[in-house]
Image (tube, rainbow, N blue to C red):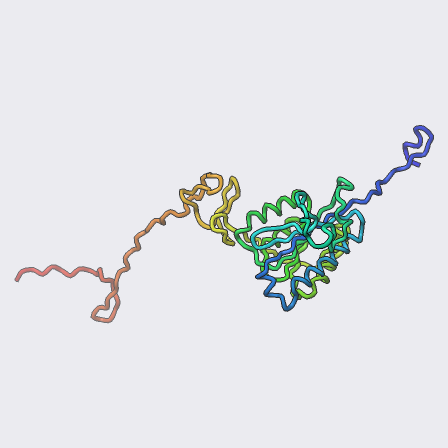
Length: 293
């Protein structure tokens, strides 16, 4: 019984929505061949892909509404692996069924509901490139605005920009000390149940975050730099004429770069010893002028 029952003498019940919200997992795999060659004896890329597929299948097994997308990030480009892009047309001479895939076909059932919980997982093996700082941060801020966490597992290398993105979006960053345990890291560090499960678990992660940025002029990682107050561009050195290279605003640098005032140093008086050994200033009492004889 509630307050509404007394109005028309009938029982009213609260209706709770039991509709399941699907979860979209986007996996970005770093396919840099030079980086994978460094760990091929420990974890070849073929075995890493097999472990990733096991993790993806576990995500899809939780619900038939769950979705997945896999992207290969190469050295100079990125390519969709699954699902196929809208303009993709399989060749007639392609071997096998063009619709078959190692990932269950049910994962491509898109658009069942309008609400989708998104999550990004990056499998990284390369060092962060300072030249990619701006596009990386743009993607991170877009994910943060859409409330999409960015999870990162670094099998090797130093990835401070991805670590910053994971911290900003509320994701988890794990540096795998033993790459051969990739599947264990994925299942323990990034629960397949999404945020509903990860909020109840204490996942391993990195406590210290490298918040260094890269300058917009030379793409160098900086500890200290010049920041434009209008567009927030960062420079490793003062730009020419103190004008921002991005928006053209004048940077207020104050007295930076001005030559310091030179103050002449006072000349120190030299001391000399007298006949009795006492030290006295060189500008002592002048002797009397001799009189002519």
